[in-house]
Image (cartoon, rainbow, N blue to C red; front, side, top):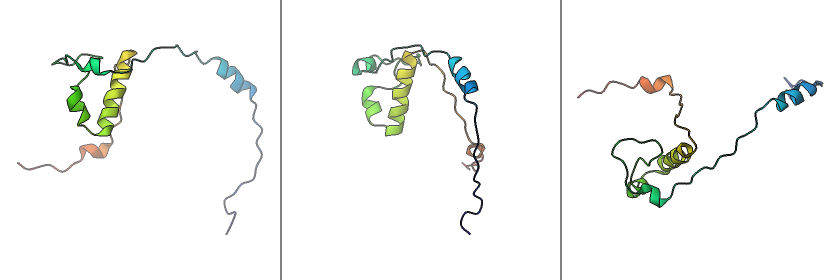
Length: 101
């Protein structure tokens, strides 16, 4: 039963098309990503403001690592102008059983 489904072929690829396509890719624009500091966590706004921390430093330290990483990403991303997060929520997330009061 060994080698069932194996296919031994040799394919020749024309790389000239790939080289031309690679030259069309736009150049990366350098930017400075601001690393959040403790100073950023003073005077937390009561309402959401883009680029400002969402929580006080003391509260952030008590959260799980994944939330800390997301908050750190948000602070760095907002420093270079990223203001949107796109996510994909699986359909089964909305199919939870109804809770009775």
